[in-house]
Length: 422
Image (cartoon, rainbow, N blue to C red; front, side, top):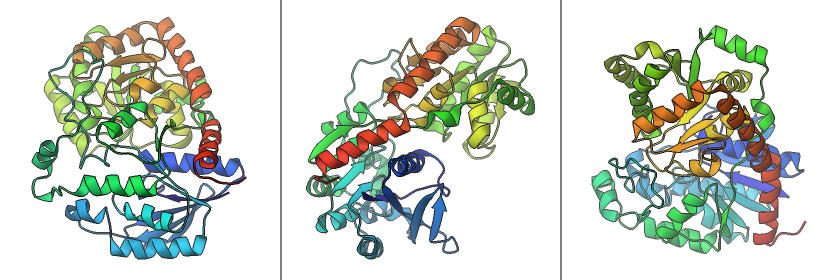
């Protein structure tokens, strides 16, 4: 099967998020014997148009525009349309699988593929089909418990207030029409995101749940590797709380910092290890840490990858994902658990589907910083509980989120819903 992946962002330019998920999927499909190519975007004219990323051929068209026009040009961009059309004519794939195309490649690229009679699949990684920015309006910061259900309807007024002059009232209606007419199946990594889409009348011919997969072997590390990582970071004898991914306010940076004084009071050797470089939002975290008197309990290790990242996950005692927005299906949850590290994660978004509360970690409302601190402290203080949860987490990831098993399910979806022959 000849598969063309469309995605605005793809490694190495964009090492996290949807691009990394797409890369894992490409490698898995190749392992299953399929021919895979990627059409992505480069914003730098000097960057190469064609490259090989972990064995995956990637062609990058050059596209750039002022993002103040995002609400319009994400729907249709003449420059993108010409380049996508030309590439489709050259490659002539059997099917199209799009990931995030809501910035540069545009939703119109899905219509271009369907006009050629191609099966079209779209994996949604966030709420941008119904929101202009991160989805927070369904959350009341005054909540302290974990709500049993949420009202996911997006208010046009809330979007207008956030976007102001950049708000385009017809945007969502146009997106709904494009998806309904041109997409054979929308795939969502979380059931929660499917609920968001349905609450806001987004539909394709089929709406399917398919969680992302990872290669668990990539997150195995030896005790020697973990000890070396601890020594290099000056963390011998410390209890490590790992905070990884794209660090920003919405990811719960302030909440974990507010929890740290409570944690340190019970576990004086606790340290928050942030996998980000100092600068940007990290500078703000340091300012908050100074005001809370916990600066000496915060460390920054930079952006890690490969064996070093695996050692960091393995060396950690607990991983935290305290997002305060709809965080669809953070890959960090799977990576930490694959390394045998339990997760204390947010109740907002898809984390409760990836982390089994009370079995492989804990689910909390991150606005309840006392509860967040209590769950983390419990794991740091109880070695037996931490090790038992970590082992259950490792087994669960291998059983439910193995990259090749998820790719096999994806191929079955292609054949079932895309009317493809073997």
